[in-house]
Each structure stands twice: as structure tokens, then as C-alpha cells.
Amino acid sequence: MGGGTVRFVLRRLAQLVPVVLAIAALNFVLAKLAPGDAADILAGEAATSLREGPGASPAAVAAAGEARRRRSLRRLGVVAALLAALAAALAAGVVLLSTVFFIAVEEDGRLAIFSGLPAEVGPVPLHAVYRRSVVAYDSLSPAARTLVDQRRLRGRQDALGVSEQLGMWP
Image (tube, rainbow, N blue to C red; front, side, top):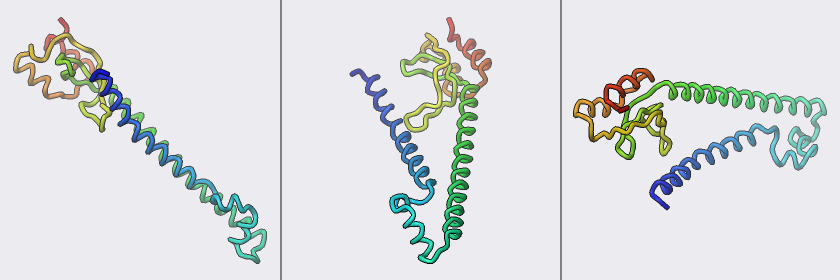
């Protein structure tokens, strides 16, 4: 296996950790939202009458069951609202990442325009190559290198204009 393949496999394995943790957390939340518990389900009616007391009336048992259902629905609503807020935040992040650009050096030493932020979250980069150049970083003047090293965020048109100034498209 080449170095690129090993790096790819390691990156995928690192991305697996948060996915497994998210699935475990979701499973835990869903199990907690279910009304009653496993012992109640297995014991059936006997568990309900024992919990409410030996002399509890059917109306009291029904009222207690209704209260538990309302609490479960309220919890489900809170979790749904939190998931919706998280989805909205992720959507806003995707939109942000698709509208900002910067010029940087690829691993092979050539210049490229990147879309996104010049950062990584663990092994996951927050950017992708938008357009590759054949111009090497080493061939730039010191002033042009300083411009590239800044990794300043720009709009698409501004990044394309700076790339023209750098002579990235011979």
C-alpha cells in the first residue's frame, strides 16, 4: 500500500469514531424516551398495579400512565427541537464553507484555490480544492509567497483575481 492509501485508511478510521459515538448517543436517547422500562414491558399489567400500590383504582393507574406518556412526548419534542437546531447549524456551516475561498499550497507544492476554511477538525479538513494550478510555490517571488502564506479568506471573484495576479493560470 502506498502512503496515500495508508493516509486515506487512517483518516476514514478516525472519522469512524465520531459516527459510532453519535449512533450510541442517539440509541441511548431513544431508549430513554420510550415510556416505561424493559421490566414494565415484560411484567405487563402486574408491574403497573404494583407501582401504583395494591389499592390503586383503575382511574389512578390510567392517570399515571397518561402522565408518563406526556413526559415522554415532551422529551421527544425537546430532542426533536435540538436535532432541528443542529441540522440548521450544519446547513448554515455548509453554506458558509461554500462561499469562502483562500489560496494555499497543496501537498505536492503547487498552488490551488481552496473552498472553505483553512482548518481541520481532527482528521477532517474544512476545505476542498476548488481549482488547481500548475504553478509551484517555490517559483513565486517573496512578496507573492507572503500573499499565499496569509491564507486570507476571500470571495470567489477576489480569489480568482488574486490567482491571476500570482500568475497561477499560465
